[in-house]
Length: 201
Length: 242
Image 1 (cartoon, one colour):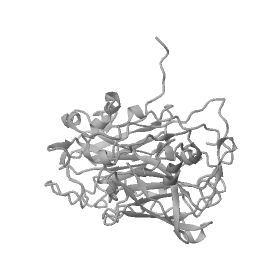
Image 2 (cartoon, chains in turn cyan, yellow):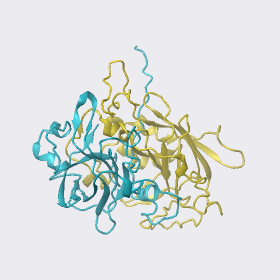
Image 3 (cartoon, chains in turn green, brown):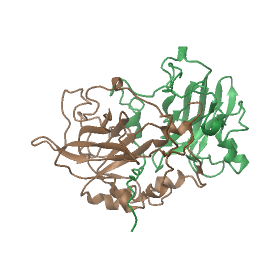
Image 4 (cartoon, helix red, strand yellow):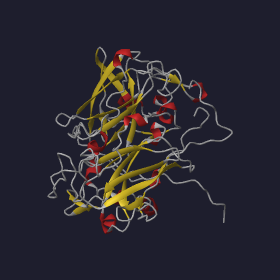
């Protein structure tokens, strides 16, 4: 016999299911007015006062057959333009860093309007290239999928996460491509050719 | 928070498998390649916060919130309650919990749900609350009905409530489902069966809890939620630049 561990076991995930939008984005689901104030509909407290560049990231979430999913729901979390996470001292008060957005029910395309994040220094003085963290849920996804958006017009050469990806062509799956001034394209592929790198952090 | 260590790595053996042929939609929505595992970074160790001021007085009362208190929903009245804790057993205070569910007949207020059971004009089917300083939360609602769904030829979902929890860091983010003690459909459900560790599935089943049941009013079910914890030892490096 040994001593008993008194740690608890994490609650198991279950799929968000086909009706996740009524719970997390009631207005999108057609149940507008349910709450006085819906949360995370934008990462801005006041876009006109937010520091840094406002950008739009457009993309789709493709399943293993190449179909752009109509029911994916995504959450983003990021630091502000100066590399400070909202809630920490000195963070931009006009920016929450967190947004919920969904694939369009007709086209399967999503748009995230946010500020371009700065780089930051993590544990051991390691500097991460600018990135936005994503969490993807939908019917058929049994545990939410984590990934990151990096940017092709930033210096990603020394990013500690990108440098851990052994198959170098797969790095491209995490890099948003600039399509116009302030507009980027970032597609997520759940399975198969060009499969996005998903994270376990 | 700045003196805390990384998130405890997730034990994926207690979670559902991503690919399960008996849950057909998962077949084309599960990655084939392994996840990239690394120690957590500030991007996962920080997370959004929400103030109590965003919430309305009836937000955690699904019996009344759709009609803004004008008329109660139909169904078996229940209190769903419990605590949010982390793996170290510490309460997780001031965190947002959101729930959504079918009505007492098994029908969601969603344009894609066309089940025979009618909508209840007095039931919307979602609610939200923020845990108190001890990690405790409560919802008043009706027990959702079981319903059939298109998967294998005759699959039914057990009675369940969907739950979304934030915790204090983005890496703790969790969506799960609460099942009800004694529901025979749990053992036939291909979504419940995506969890291969039986004890892990058992922890999603809420027991009937007479200690919180109010006589002549509602029954109660207890559902505690455990989120990932943070490693803390005397040997941790401190975060820099935070």
